[in-house]
Length: 122
Image 1 (cartoon, rainbow, N blue to C red):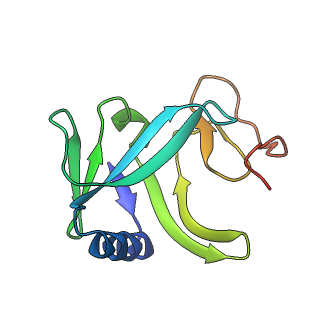
Image 2: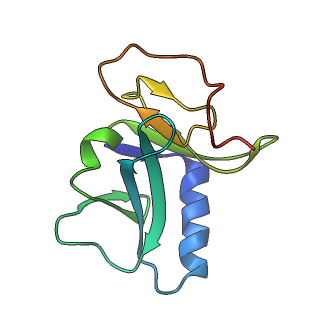
């Protein structure tokens, strides 16, 4: 379903440890961003009735029903490099992405490699 790298798991565990009321990580997809859909993440104190719950190395990941199909096969990594520090999504279902990787398109249109129009870049 969804994969978190070891680095991402360690980062999430650290965040949960620092947030006593949190018991899991919510990963979602919503409309928006410069490519059509955008990723979202946040700590949660509990799951919702309709959530799919994925257990990954002691972390509960909560996914709402609308996001499940778009997150199938997605790899979430935690990176620290010259471009910044944070979570990075690699989505095999995306037909195009913005330059910063925070939004994507999953439609039937042809994949694009032009990432110059990303409005998230500083």
